[in-house]
Image (cartoon, rainbow, N blue to C red):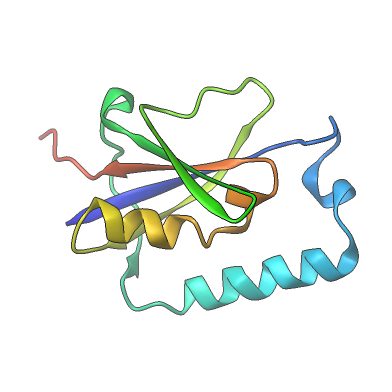
Length: 117
């Protein structure tokens, strides 16, 4: 199954995330993105599925929290997305939880890819 992982960059203190975390945390996040970018099951992005069919993933206190539907937070800003080939929604959620903003005040919305034409 193909999933789109839509990344929302939160602003935990009202400032950009890059101003809210240490240089060491920034370097760690960049290293995590680098590892994700090397995964063979990440591909260029097709059109997104409908928002009402989304599952939103957050990590709080080390626990993965999922919510049905899109991530609705006026403080969040879409920072990018990944396209992921995964066996099912649970596998997609596990990988989405590795994307740094999921635990740094933002979230990652998981949607199945759809064809409309």
